[in-house]
Image 1 (cartoon, rainbow, N blue to C red):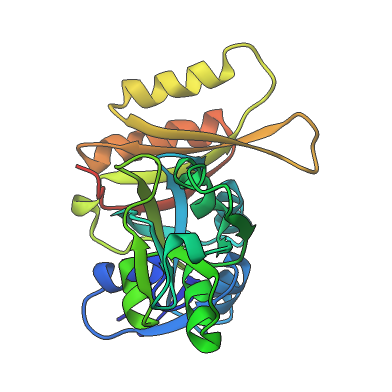
Image 2 (cartoon, rainbow, N blue to C red):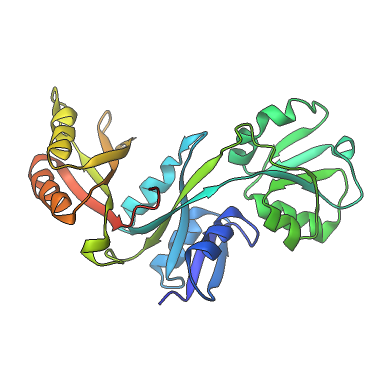
Length: 275
């Protein structure tokens, strides 16, 4: 039973929207201004789950979050895809021409850079969280500044939307993962996706051999991400997402990969949300 969920950001953030949509019933929300703090709350038992953005369809993987899950021996128990619609918002009674500065998360600014090229008078300033900026504007009622965020943030913090859906690419989707301290959230017969991690020797064809094993075991690789091992220069860990029709296929692949690959690890087994 989920009681509290930790998110990066505050109410009105996209992480908050995912928490609302993913979990049934009332949940307690723990607002954290960094993913490290959110993970810390989970490790210390203050929260039952953490919502973490893991990749975006425009800018790609959020690599540090892969490392956080791995380093703290946490597990992905679910995923959620959210269509990200960015809106420009400010204290009511202003126009875009009145705005001198826009504060937002670097990722949000990057996703909207084409829109802001049309307004060279606006200075873009990187900040910790989209919704937190909206909250700050409500508290100060400061004019001449704006935030980029969700319609929920505009509603919660009584801001006026000056421009809707300003992201460069219309279909801007972010994949979020639900992270817990333990694996296996659902029965095996319902599991059809897994997140895996392994390391390989510097041998010709070593990665191709592993990928062939996955293919032979009827696993479909939907994501592969390499991450350098800081303590071992020029050696990489691979993070892979796979889907499968039966858990037996996945079980067979795991038994082989445990022998073939170095430091093979299951980061999570869950239901595929992208059908």
